[in-house]
Length: 73
Image (cartoon, rainbow, N blue to C red; front, side, top):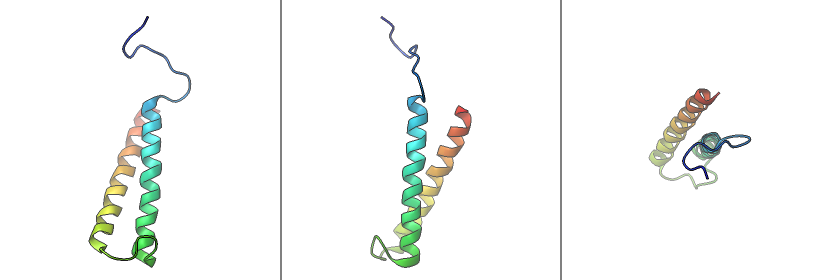
């Protein structure tokens, strides 16, 4: 029986799935934060500092996910 990381998996590896899912979730949250800053929907329009920090952090996660995904190609 093999142990460790020597197993071959068909399709995308777990690292790629984690990278793609992090990019997808951060992209969705980025759209929601920007929409809330512009219109006030879905979070209610309060606490602009938190929304700006949310936009910055989602943008950073999206960039880091894209950069890591480029390394996997």
